[in-house]
Length: 155
Image (cartoon, rainbow, N blue to C red; front, side, top):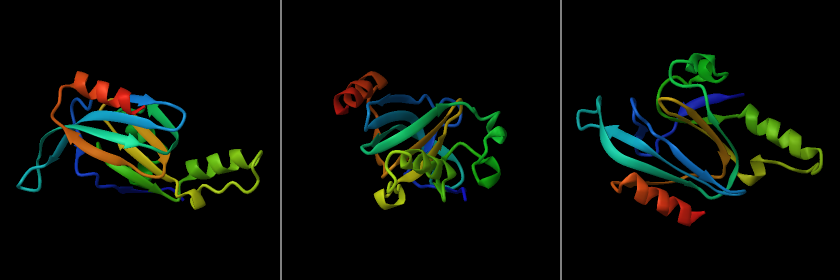
């Protein structure tokens, strides 16, 4: 279980100041972060503005530690979660745990049949893990205050 693979959303969290901002309700999560993309040389990163990620079918999420320095203490570190990037966790033990918990009341509950996936966003000072059906990613050059207003209106 728990195979971590890098997941391409068209950008990466910025290495020094990722600056994630999150908003959520019972079923949706939206967040934004400072983003970079690969430069034309294919090796270096350049500024890409802010990424805005909408998660319309968010089952659950975890946000906080570890930061980049403590990342080796994360249980998925030895399984491919190593740098500031975006990942998908295949065969997620966290999704399996959520399914087990829900089967107490709903014996036929099956997350896989719902298309639930486990994504992991490694920021500079924090980590975000999300169980959801998918992500909707867009890029913005708007000031953070404008993005926050737009995020709030989506919820």
